[in-house]
Image: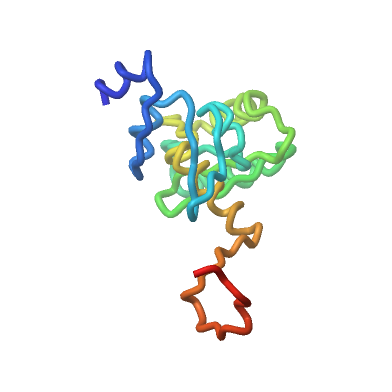
Amino acid sequence: MDLIRQLGQTRTIVVATHILSDIDQVATHVGVIHDGRMIFCGSMREMKRRLRRDSFRLDLDGSGEQLRRFVDRLSSIDGVHARLDRDERVVVSMSDGVSRAGALSQILNLAETEKLTLQSIQSGRNETEDVYLQLLQEDEAHGFRRFDLNDSPADDASLGDLPA
């Protein structure tokens, strides 16, 4: 990765990989190809801005009952939705237009009021991977289907006179 980063300062480097965390470290711009078509081309920042969901996870110390009460109380914050995952981490998502910083401030104040100790905050599992998967889902949703002559046998009449 160091060599790619160094060369990338003066050259355009094309890297084909499925290890998105590496790309996140070295790339300033990306192109995403799906089924042989470019479905995104732009800066990493622009790509990450496309991420629809605005969510994060809170790792809090507290009893199961305290965490459930906390999640219930979070529903009183406009545009904030919360649930406990199977590891008893609080997963929070926000509606479009809700200030992330403002909501997070309210959430942390509520955690303090509930006497919960914050251990960590994670913004998505892997933001780059999340955006990549979202791009693929959007591409699939548009209904693009590649025409493949091998999918079904065609007779000469359906193909017309094709050049040899």
